[in-house]
Amino acid sequence: DAGVTQSPTHLIKTRGQQVTLRCSPKSGHDTVSWYQQALGQGPQFIFQYYEEEERQRGNFPDRFSGHQFPNYSSELNVNALLLGDSALYLCASSLAYRLSDRSGNTIYFGEGSWLTVV
Amino acid sequence: QKEVEQNSGPLSVPEGAIASLNCTYSDRGSQSFFWYRQYSGKSPELIMSIYSNGDKEDGRFTAQLNKASQYVSLLIRDSQPSDSATYLCAGGLYNFNKFYFGSGTKLNVKP
Image (cartoon, rainbow over all chains, first blue to last red):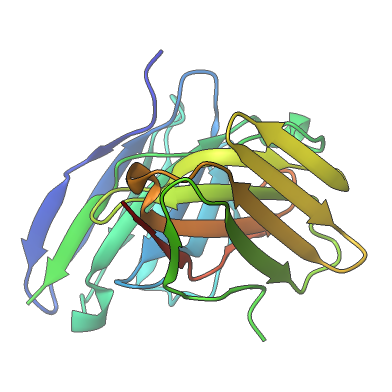
């Protein structure tokens, strides 16, 4: 049973550039959430996708955008990179949004993508 | 006020002792709560989930939830050096579209 997979694992970008991070959810999951974790901090919620739509968004600027594909995989795009965008970007998957109003739903994280902006 | 708050630590305990980690949350609508362990340079790894008031035990780990006090805790019995990590508390709705993490408590277990 494949867990949550992310790519790339590490990347270095220059200020002002754009980056795309990719995620495939755990088998059986169709909801994907993205988190940013700066050094020494807990993960911060960026947004969540279900049925190819953004369902909820955290306090992140429009430079952060995403997409979900029919196979439930997802991309996170960040434009006009700033030094402060350097962080670990985590993808998490969970059960179908419409079935998730119940206890027992669990969220699983991928290994993350380390982004360094120089 | 942060949605989920934890003492950053470090919390130091001797090997074999009980480690007690605590967390408070501000959103009374939160339904599900999780403890994650994160080793340096790695992604968070799920340890426990808890949804109802009371205690939930899994091996050496016990999670406790008190919704009236908006308080969640994790007890680690017979602590081992391999338990040394940052422990993240998280809580939110069942569908995770509002799901918040604390900043983590660093645990050091001394041999």
